Amino acid sequence: MIFILTGAGISQESGIPTFRDAGGLWEGENVEDVATPRGFARNPDRVLDFYNARRRNLLDPAVAPNAAHQALARLEAAVAARGGEVLLVTQNVDNLHERAGSKNLLHMHGEMLKARCQLCGEVMRWEGDLTRQSVCPSCAGPGRLRPHIVWFEEMPLYMPEIEQALNRCRLFVSVGTSGNVYPAAGFVSLARRAGADTLELNLERSLGASRFRDGRYGKASAIVPAWVDEVLGGQ
Image (cartoon, rainbow, N blue to C red; front, side, top):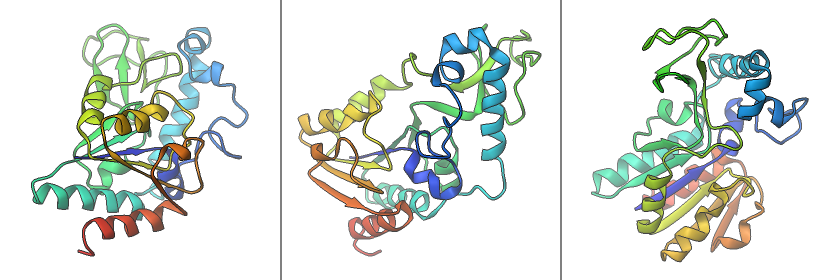
């Protein structure tokens, strides 16, 4: 099984800002204010406005999957046709992997185009703005909807499934990640402990690059399709 972890670097070329670079999502914002449960409790309007702007950006027609997203979807389909498996775990909250055709996919940090009710726990598709007046369509509770995003201080989603997959993968590939956000930054060590080969595909060496057996560096839209072509034998 091939386990692929993707981060913000794979979507940057599609017009999705990364979090920490100049001009990124956190520029001019305090993480404590807009990406923690305490920040939401303190000023829900500010947090909702922040994510409303991110959601509108994602729905911009100019934002589309790039060659890296498409190559990973092609890899998954080809490996599945041969009886194998590719699991794609993304830290990204955009929907570009789905739009490119990926099927076996886990969003460990949530999804921008979904909302979650804090009253009944229902998760639902949500493409418009969220406000404190928004009503849950499941339980009709007003003022209880929040972005379906894993904030700092919250546990990522699907961790049991992810840990099981890391224990049985034969190849672990990290694409476009910074290597400093845990628990994802520790996945390569778990995969190595299980005997997997490891590869980093990134714009430049990440903070955790020394933990990978091999690394290739450059724009995701170039290096990811090239690697997929190698895996598939040029097919």
